Image (cartoon, one colour):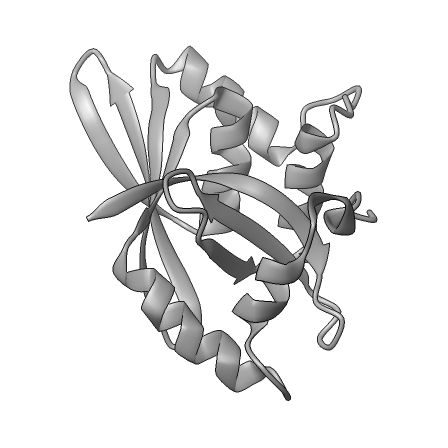
Length: 159
């Protein structure tokens, strides 16, 4: 079963210095942190902060290609977590019906926010993520840390 989420923000892991994409459940407010690459975080941050670049970035280009090919981005499904790696599907629609494409969650989210598509997380991932993120923290739970953050703590992602 999937739950709709939205991008709550981006932040940098203070220990690993890696960007974290923070997704928050629309219904229950649960937090799902996904560690992502710097380039993907930059692509998400540019869009969230309303920064327009003179030439299309990779995710903008992909969106333009999909538009020209007659596809719309319907939704993103973050579906699994295996060996610390998240898996997602990008669901596209054309006149011929829906097509599902395997994607990294960070790329799928970067495209979804540009195209106004909804993002969903498989319910079981919250429990899986707890075991992965808790093991990577020296003290306490990363979820406890994220739950205590206020919106102003998120700040702007430094590019």
